[in-house]
Image 1 (cartoon, rainbow, N blue to C red):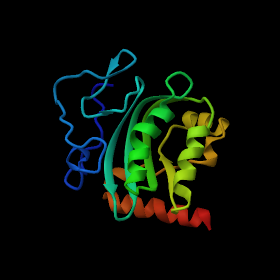
Image 2: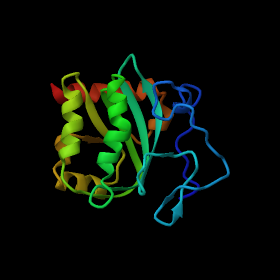
Image 3: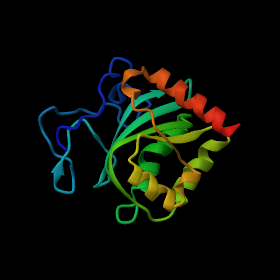
Image 4: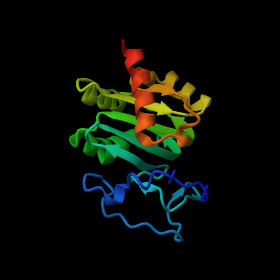
Length: 187
């Protein structure tokens, strides 16, 4: 797992550590010191710690004029033991909502498993953004993870989609593609 880096080709467009509105503003990263782990496996030092032992993120892009963020995730999304959704909601999402981010693309190719413990925080997140036309799209999660989210009835708040070639797109083009899908879905 230590060699899985967050997607870095959009760094010319955006870096969370240079964004004054980002929860990770002024964060300093090491290229060589591996300190964060998911269980006993070290992860690349470019991933951002959200105070979870199993889930790490990277805000790949945020646009405060268009009100969206693209967030990549790695690890195990474990609400049952770690309450990862509460940690993510309180430590990251609430700060982004306060800065008028209402549309979220969550890239989950590196989410290994999901363990549910209710859907209260997902519902709260959805309620916080829906009046602003907001949505949450989970992109490229594994079939098993989607099944586990659906079994927990979280699919009422998060839409699952697949765009395998997202890395070939600029962030605004990925957003427009997902936003257009959501407009069609919500009509």
